[in-house]
Image 1 (cartoon, helix red, strand yellow):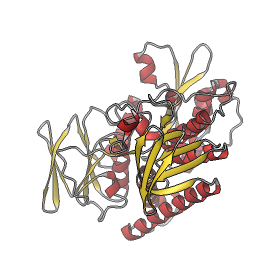
Image 2 (tube, helix red, strand yellow):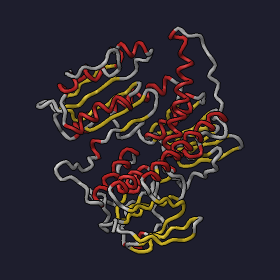
Image 3 (cartoon, one colour):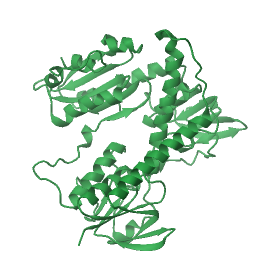
Image 4 (tube, helix red, strand yellow):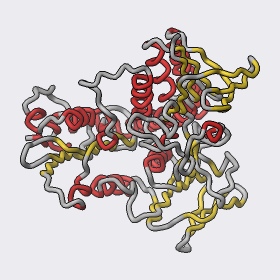
Length: 453
């Protein structure tokens, strides 16, 4: 009899697990209560990047006169932008459904509750069904965190999911939260013509990132007229007609037309019936071991719910690893456990920011000897061709062996370029391996070769 796998959640982790397990011979049921493809993915991550792409196009058009072009209109059409976002969502959801169907994965559009260790109950338009499972995979994702002091009205006081696009373009947007999501929204709103204030609870944006990288982004924000409330923690939000007012713990007050909260997320673990199967949680997350198993060995967790890196790329890899482990398909000679310290990540501001592996500041704080080389994009011919020489490439390597330990990139297409360093970090390549590669000229990637020299 085929292994029976029931997956709760149809985002990147659930979909990857479902298709991999089905190819390995499992009977798979995937239960999703919202959108196939995942709400956080298709109604948060993807639309935010699509809006950023539109904002980047508008910014490019505004500066195109420097490249020998006549100035053209870049007026924003929110209605058309909304249609574009919905079309992208529909297309990606259709592609996901088609892939799942091709692997004979049974889709159930409804809610799921764990009844006991080997039973998951679904409630949908088809009625209530109890699914017997050899393996249960929890991949329910997360949702925006809303503090008690912020009364969300989904109009002037918004979470991220109210902003794709907003009902009206903010004349002055106040963004609370200076992590990845917060700074992306600062860039997004400013590029579309809004005045922006960013409330930063720490003394730098992007806390935890390389200070030099954070400083480069702050400098660009200030050049673009963004107001930074640094060292200020928001404590209250109120509406006064068409104005919103944000109060901070240091007495400062920010006034604008809209407020957007970007202060993290919380896992979707309530009402799953985890206690019925004895699954332990920690602050709503399901702790897992290196094979993604919970304290109940045949119940796995992946994606945001696992409490590991909240990245779609990580969730997709976790889903595949779960399927291979559950189906006994791991090759012991070639198998690699997920090394979360080597996951590449990107921030889609302008300039883009990307990093992977060991950061320079972390190396020095640990007292670790490293070699750090940095090359500005201003030295690359392609940057001059693009009329955008902002940013730099930084590579962190072992001074004794030359092995690439990490790196950061600030500049155009950083999210694409970091793949070279990610490949090097994951596979233990050296700076010589990069420098000896024959790269295309002229490209921004040449800065990687120079930094590796």
